[in-house]
Picture 1 (cartoon, rainbow, N blue to C red):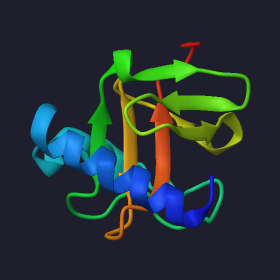
Picture 2: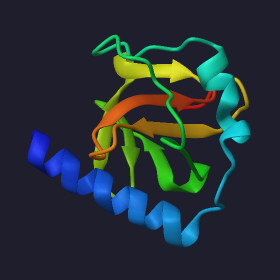
Picture 3: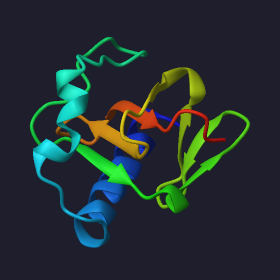
Picture 4: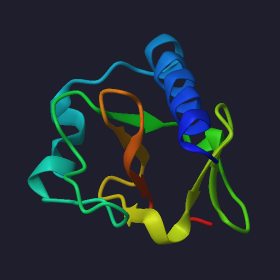
Amino acid sequence: MGRKAAAVACAVLVGVGASGWRVLAHDDHDWIRKGGYRSPLTNEWCCDKDDCVPIPADHVSPTAPGWLIVPTGEVVPYIDTLPSEDGRFWRCHQPNGVRRCFFAPPGVS
């Protein structure tokens, strides 16, 4: 997926998150910031204020190349996936919607 397509997918994901998923306080995913997680792809910090959103498990599907985020069509390569400490899927993004980090529950496939 190209950068432009990824940005559009991210914008859709953020819109879906804002409209249909539970709005979270930063504390709900503060373990990401406290854990000092960095993107396996870019080495940037995963979490800044209000940039990580949970993704319901039924919106994520394993595929051969990586995790498919069904509402947006974004595929996150397994090599770019970090282990989730709370057993949920999380997507952290830059202000422009580009993915910083993706977390998946360990052992889920």
